[in-house]
Image (cartoon, rainbow, N blue to C red; front, side, top):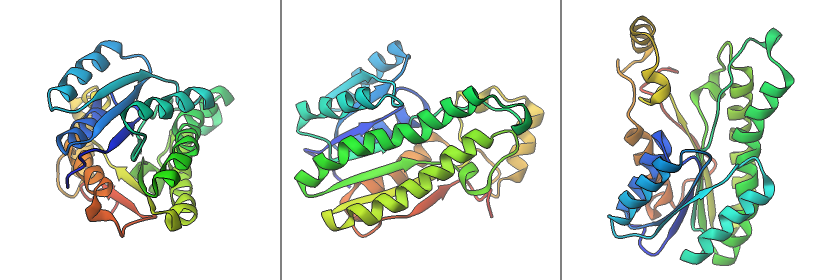
Length: 246
C-alpha cells in the first residue's frame, strides 16, 4: 500500500484519529498537508514527526466551516503537486437534549462536521478531475448510523456525511475518483479518557470485542481506502467499532 509521490490533505490532523491517519499515510510515502484549528504546538510536533519519515509536511491553521479558508487549504497542497487523497476528519461535539439545544449549538456542529467536508470536497474535486483520479475518505461515526440520545446535532452531521459520500461517489466515479466513509465507534482519545471508570466499563460491556478501539485501527482502514488496493471500492460506509452496532 505505497503512496509515494502522492499528497494527502487531512483535516483535524493534529491530534487523535487525525494524527494517526497522517502518520499512517506518511509511513506509506505520502506527503501530508493537514489542517488544525487551534492546537499549534501539537501541529508543530506532528510536522516534525512526519518529516522524520522522509516526506514533506505542512500544518495549515484552517476553520473548515469557512469556504474560502478551505480553498486555501487545498491550494496549499499544490506546493506538493496537488491533492491526491482527501481525508475529512475534522469534527466537533456540543451535546445536549433536543428540547434544550440552541440553534447555535446545532448550527456550529453541522457547519464543522458536514459543511466542512463539503467545502473541502468542493475545492479538491476539480483538482482530482484534472489529475484523472483521487481518493476521498470521510470520517463519519456509528452515531450517524444508529443515532444517540443527547447528540441530535452530531448524529445529523454524521448521517449527512454518509449521504454526501454516496452522492459524490456516484458523481465522481467516472472520473476515477473513489469516495468512501469510515464510521469509527468508541476510540481511545482525549474524550474517552475523560469518562468515569463506571461509564467506561459500561461502554466496554456493550462492545463485542470488549475494548475501545485505537486510533491506529481507524488509520489502517483509511490507508487501505487511500491505496491502489481499494481501487474498486467506492460509495461504502465501513464501521470500525468492535461490533458495537451488531
